[in-house]
Length: 250
Figure 1 (cartoon, helix red, strand yellow):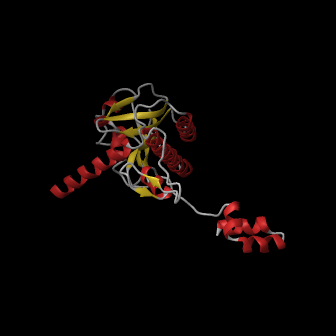
Figure 2: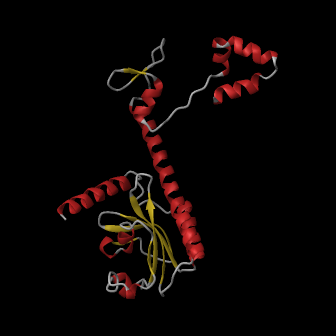
Figure 3: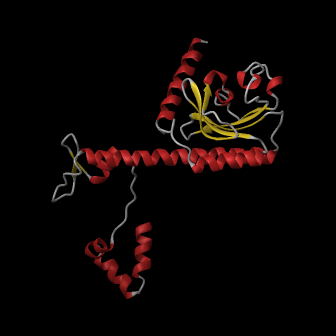
C-alpha cells in the first residue's frame, strides 16, 4: 500500500509538471478549443460542454459552453476521477453514484446529473484534464456520440502539442536574442560557438537550444559543384529536375 501511495504521488507530480509545460492555465479563450466544445455540446445534445485542465488544487476551464464560472475546487471535480481512469468516465445519473451523490456540483449549481469525461491524454501518457459533456438530467451517449467525443479529445491534444512546439521554438529564438542577436560562426568550417565557448556544428547547436529536428538534402549550387557528373547525365537526359528531386528525397 505504501509503495502504491508513493507511486501515485510521483505520477501526480509528473502530470502537473507536464501540464505546466503547455503554459496554458489562465490563458484567454481560443476559437480552436471553443469550436471543439461547441461541437461536443451539439453532438451529445447537452447544455454544458467543457475543456478542463486539472491543476493541483483546482479544475480550470480553458473552454466552456453553458457555464459562467471559470473553475471549481479540485475536490469537487468529476474530472479528477476521470483522469484516473483508463477509459472515459460516464456517469448516467450522479444521484445514483455514491461517489457524487453529495457533491456540491450535484446538490447545487450546475446540478449535474449526467457526465461524460474523455481524458486529454498526451503522447507521454499524462492526462491533463478532459473534454466533458454535462446535463442536468440523467442521460447516456450512443456509440456515434462516444466515437465523436473520443476523436474530439484527441484533436484537443493535437492543439496542445502544437502549442508546446510553438512555445519551444519561441524559447529557442529568445535564446538567440539573449546572445544580443549575434552567433559566433567560424569563417572556415561554419561551426557555431555555444554559450560555454565550445564549437559545434549548427545542427547540433540548434538541437541543444530547441526541439528542432533536421532532414538532409543537397542544394542546386552544391549539386553542381560536388556532383557535376550526375548533373551532366541528368541534363543530357533532360531530366535534371526530376532526378534532383529523387536524389533529395532519397
